[in-house]
Length: 81
Image (cartoon, rainbow, N blue to C red; front, top):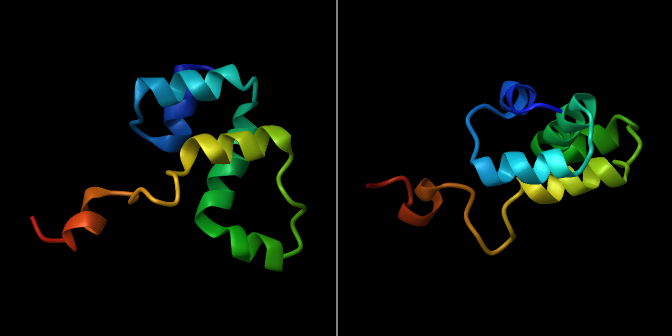
């Protein structure tokens, strides 16, 4: 998967994340699947989708922030700057 393909799915993203994703050996389809799981994991399970495979699960780990870290700055400031 190329840098351009990764950006086409995720939008602007840190170069370290791009490198980590590329090192997984995943396909662009697997990246799209991981991105879908991040946004709607409960809905996908409810629709009967199979749980993600190993590569997709690894991509999800790379893309999701750890539980103790906020997803963006607005969560730490309450939306106020």
